[in-house]
Image (cartoon, rainbow, N blue to C red; front, top):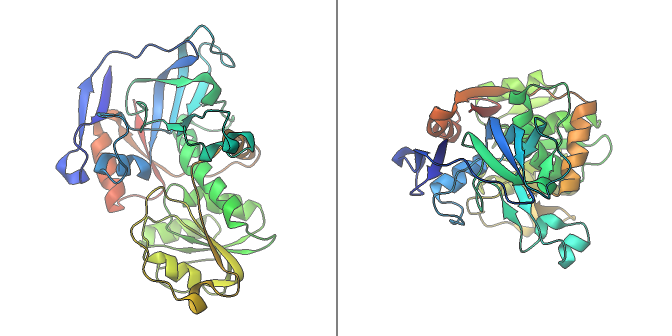
Length: 332
């Protein structure tokens, strides 16, 4: 089968990925073998390719927004039948025994493992996934639309939880790519007023089309104080900007897995009056079930840009350069 591998992590322009021919993987007893139909392109894949995240598996195949069909099963794999449509997401293993798993915070498990970082992912024609970490998918969406829900949608949903937007509150979104354009729709459906602050006129126009109350540059001030904000752009320089836009008691949630350095903060300007900063780390399977159920009840408009599997390196380069709105998807 064809499979992209991160051979030498580095800037995307240096060609860190190579398209290879490798054997189709064999599922372990608890795993499903999945024929990849579509795989979303996530900024985390870019961080893996460029070496922003440390190497966990040499020559790993990226991709953790996989929509596919089950073509084989291990002897103990349950919950899915052959030919079922299935979703493969970032989280693929937790220990189930540590204090974090036992209190329902499996996303913090020290033994957690991730698709496309610790194990080969979906930039390929086939992949394997433990059945216990695979997802049933909502009806009413195309495969292209479903793929971004499996990380961009999930992390946006988790970030909204961490931001604790009050009922009818004012939410600011910094950056408006694959994740933010889904989180905005969830927040709007929950009754929030959404202000988008992002570079690029096309992204600002998409935000307004989806119902944002305003859309302007990332370094601008929103038209009113914010009760909560989410930083999707991996730019630490925006942390003080977003904190300064918060009203008293506001919360900033940082959604990315990687962030450039944060400048010095001024306590009185940025944190006093009980403003707070929270990080977001992956998501739990319970988060995934809640979000995918929400997506099944509230149809989300998913903006996608299709690429052939053979053009995965170009998709990542276009993502890095901000050449499209919404989310890129690869067709295997």
